[in-house]
Image (cartoon, rainbow, N blue to C red; front, side, top):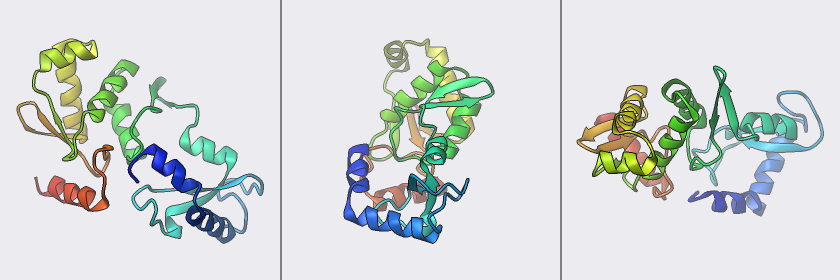
Amino acid sequence: MKSNTLYKKYLQSDEWKVKAEACKKLADYKCNRCDEVTKLQAHHKTYDRVGEELQEDLECLCEMCHNKEHNISGKLQTNDRYYSIKNLTTRVNIMNLLDIVATTCKSPKDTTILNQLLEMSDDTSRIRIDNVTSLAKELGVSRSKLNAILLAQVNGGLFKKLSQGVYFVNPFIFIGRRVTSNKKREALQTEWTTS
């Protein structure tokens, strides 16, 4: 799926409705978490095969459990810190990304900066920073703070530093919206493991 808009359209398609109904039927029309029998929804356990998902990629949840799973409020609480996640690009391994955010971002501002850095990734999953001082100013932080955030992401496994000002974003955890095909994602994942 290319974008959140395409994903929302897919969820309205007959193809998805058939898969969602099959998911509910396999669960005997009960929530897999709480046994609720009303307001059932098919939940993607993984977004790796959206559009080509297998039944094992799906889980039948009631609306309340589904909202809890997606943290619909848009906030994640970790160690008494809250991180906004609602603006992140949709194609991510959200649990791994949230683990990294929880360990590498010391404040909501750090999370916002990480989000802005991820949005800069190109179709090769690279973030290219020509001038750290200018970018830091644009992001409203000091150069040393931006360097600390970048280093934390390298140490946390989200980025690899390839050269001065060039960072490779882990394609097993985050795929930017400019990567538009599964073949490209798979090629980037192969590159990540061999670099």
